[in-house]
Structures are given as structure tokens and as C-alpha cells.
Image (cartoon, rainbow, N blue to C red):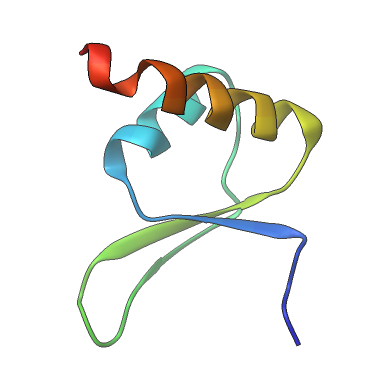
Length: 61
């Protein structure tokens, strides 16, 4: 069963971008196999808009 209520963020840059717009992650975990950290956000219309904005501008920096 797929959990569609959460957004799993594996990008440190995206994490900082979302936090700059006052999005709060409710969990931060480490992937057991890779050792990389990821953050979990609750999906919302605002979060979707921020991710879209990030994807449109991320290559400009």
C-alpha cells in the first residue's frame, strides 16, 4: 500500500528551500542501506507549489 500523504525529500538543497518558506518536516531519518538522510513532509497544495517552483528554478543557481 502506497502512502500518498507524505513527501520524502532526499535533497538537502530542496530541504533548505522548503524550510525557507516555513514548511516544516515532521521526521528526519537515515536510509539504512545508503546512510543518507531524508526528510518527511506532509503533502499540501502549498508544498506542491513550492516543489514546482523549485524544479523550475533549481538550474538557475
